[in-house]
Image (cartoon, rainbow, N blue to C red; front, side, top):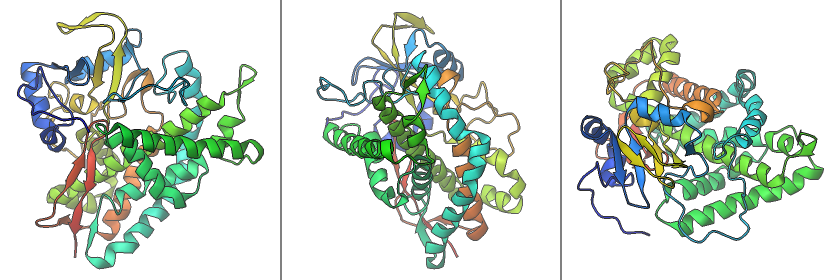
Length: 400
């Protein structure tokens, strides 16, 4: 694992894996917006981090000079294989047009409002059964025992893979996303994940089902079947992007409600407020930061970005920008005007946003229906993961 030295100047040497930043990035963002809105570091290569809404969204829309070919916030260390398993990356999120355009079009029907409405009943049943498992104990880990159990099973259903493998899927996704400074662990998780889907793709050739993986495998584009390596990349994307991101949003929301009694009781007393509350919790605790690669020298806000530099698309910081959001550092459950970018901005805006919203809403509704009063357990440690996706990994709570 790479060594890490303390940050002395966040403007010129930031580190998104710094324990203090993971625990409380909000203070850092507030400071940078006032002093150096686009920070820089040479850790892990020349990297920029905008913190203002205006800069983040402008870069997100400039696909000519900011490529999505490398989306990992922390570059993958180690040698690149001669024949990469995923030569197309994980499209559409890691693709630029024109590949991005048609691969995204293949995915969108699976995450339409109509499709997502069809997933809601199973999601609600799952959430209720999880609560049944611990409601009588008076305590639970709201992250590991609840939030982290939901999206992985919903995504498994969409992909047509056994929900019983949820624990394995969860570990693989964690290996890929959370252990940024441990290249061997990242590689292990990636190999297990892709190996599993390669086996499934081979099986679906002769045994197709009514699922996303089978559909992609038997789809033609311009008269030609979709390359199986592209199908593999898309399947990996759906699992990785659809699991850690959403459970982080659910976990962060439950942490907020456990630590803000007035908001918790207000939601219990006025359940019709939930749709607005979901958007506000997404804004305030946006989990995802992506990366872009500069393709040509460009000046942004007086910062000389060079071809090959990386830019961290700090959507969470943009959502806390006080020039765009009144009381930006507060959770205002009934915020009526909420132009948040928790799902990104531009052509790479999250294709699964409808699903994520539904899962977050249902997870909160089912929890609050059975556990309207809960707090963080006194003396217990709440742990957070950060980097690409920020959210609680342990959230011990107690309730009557």
